[in-house]
Image 1 (cartoon, rainbow, N blue to C red):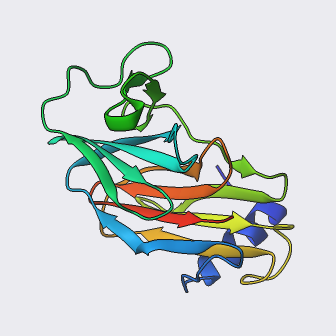
Image 2 (image 1 turned 180 degrees about the vertical axis):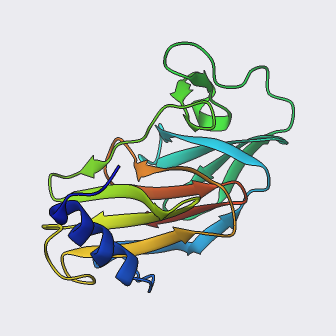
Amino acid sequence: MALNPFQQQLHDRVVAATEVVAPPAPWRPVRGGLIPVGGLMGIGFAVHPETGHDLVLTVSSSGHGLFDAVTGEKLDRDYDPAEDPDGPDLSCPGIGPVADVRIPVAGLWGGGLHNHAAGTWGVEVISPEWPNHRVLLTSGSWTGEHGKAWHHIFHASWSEFRAAGFSPTGRTLAVATSSELTLWTRP
């Protein structure tokens, strides 16, 4: 199927933006931006009941992990979880401080994360050179300039893409691949 002229122009603009750039302020990387998680299959979000921080649940081939999305600290680990994501909402039981919460997960099983936050931020995952995925963050129009209106913030070319999006609070942006979790946070 051929692209129409507008689609071709967008495709060419994205492919030309080969440089990965950091998200603009107020976004900042969490723990250097990268948390290694081997065999990562999916992620989900919860909120810490005491601190109010976003939490990220990772579901991997070696169990479930729970990370503070503001500090990057690993809060808990379950090497033998009772269940993986299941049911119509693809959720699984939380662990640690959110053990009493079921957490929807996005990744290999399907599901999805929020693609808009705070009314001004948007995230898109595209594959102009499949199977490599690019994650784009926008704070304006796609017709604007790369690095100003939209930002190529992640290029999944070394690991398989799993999921990308915002936490329900809109304070965390996550990208998950088969080998790592990359996080950015904002106040």
